[in-house]
Image (cartoon, rainbow, N blue to C red; front, top):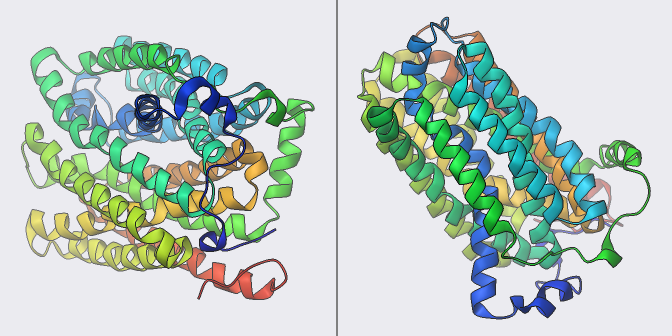
Amino acid sequence: MFQGMEDRPSSVLPAAPSVLQEGASSAGTAWRVLAVLSALMGFASISTDFYLPAMPAMAAALHAGHGMLEFSITGYLIGFSVGQLFWGPVSDKFGRRPPVAAGLVLFIIGSAGCALAASAEAIIGWRVVQALGASACVVIARAMVSDLYEGARAARMLSTLMAVMAIAPLLGPLIGAQVAAWAGWRAIFWLLVAVGIASLVALYTIPETLPPLRRQGGRLSGAFARYAKLLTERRILAYAGAGGFFYAGMFAYIAGTPFAYIDYHHFPARYYGLLFGAGILGVMASNALNARLVARLGADRLLIAGTTIAALAGGASAMAAWSDWGGLWGLVLPLFVFISCTGLIVANSVAGALAEFSVQAGAVSALVGALQYGSGIAGSGLVGLLADGTPRPMGWVMALAGIGSLLCARSLKRVASSQPAQATAVD
């Protein structure tokens, strides 16, 4: 049952005929599928990155207490984690497109609610609704990749999608800052409403990737029993843990940097997107590197390399935040290295878990996503809870997250050696 990612064949699954019969073999349709999947996977980023530069202004306008707006990210992660557990089994049973469409409608409603909110508490509540919708887009897009590809090719495809979708968080803060300066922070959420509507239209330009013969039978209530069974699989837990701890650090970065850069180091809010975008360029580069190397070196080796670098960068971030050595740039550099590890950690952890149980791709994608983004709740929540006006809480959370991610990735080797009949050792 268990195999190293690099040992699986790199081919298109036989399940793809529904797509191929509708013309996905043509270059034009293939690029359209890639574009739509990239947009769907980007919903996790654009939902937050667009309004990051406006967070201090939002806090002032809504008379929010110290650290209150950070909980809008925590609320989003709660909705995102819970939503994935629902949408994954639904997509395994009813196909991929209908649940994505329903999720996009929820996203549009939540974004409009944020635009009309009169308090920080209302923002947090509507962010939960927004996240419940966005989670359908991300979890089902990953499952659609698993419908079409397997093994190293799936990891390459995920890396390619992440590199393409990284344009959203690269441009998001820059666009958000300009929109807020021109029309106020509420206009950012109206822009997200428009993005949701455009994505809903684009969804129906691509074919369904899960044909009826491959859909899961039985009641949806059985999904939680499947989750319980999956939680007993130690390799899936190791992959999810490696990604989950990293997500805790990543969302500590997302929640903490607007206040660390703008309030603490007095960096102009309108240029915050430039610093944030530098990290996204690192993510794009590491995703491109991962896509290039994964077939040759294996996903597990690259996952261990990425988590090792992340643990070192997290420790350096904590020291820079504590000592204030180097000022703003002394903090920016290790944060850049940490975030750049995304390309080596996220795609490989998700693809590794999906490779274990490809028949239940929707449920596995949902469970892994929920565990990963659920860890982000802890990361962003701790930054908000421990907020003291300095970057220190963010730095220490990222350091602990990097260490946890490394320990989980290293445990893959121990699990493989303890199951010689089922697993192929990576090293």
